[in-house]
Length: 96
Image (cartoon, rainbow, N blue to C red; front, side):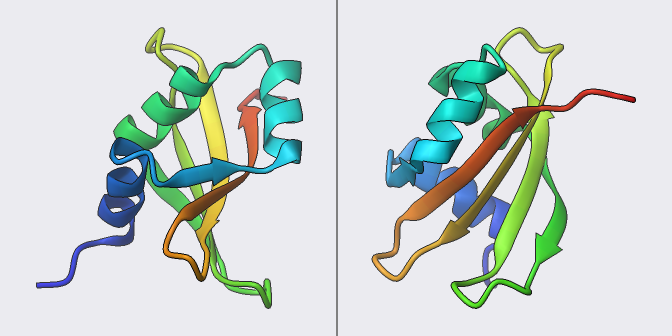
């Protein structure tokens, strides 16, 4: 039985087979998040949206919580041709 996309993403995080874009690093710092928050959000989160309109590949929007268990975090990423997972952007989810 094929594994779900969230399981595949989590495996890449657990095995440290992922990269972060410069933009993701900037956004992470701007929102006062660190790499552990991003990893935790993916490991405890769910895919909230799948975006198939990018010619470079399907993007997955994962929503989860930071290490503190309270701060909601969004992580956008995609699988790349090398087999790694690329984290494109990261943000704290805020309600308007």
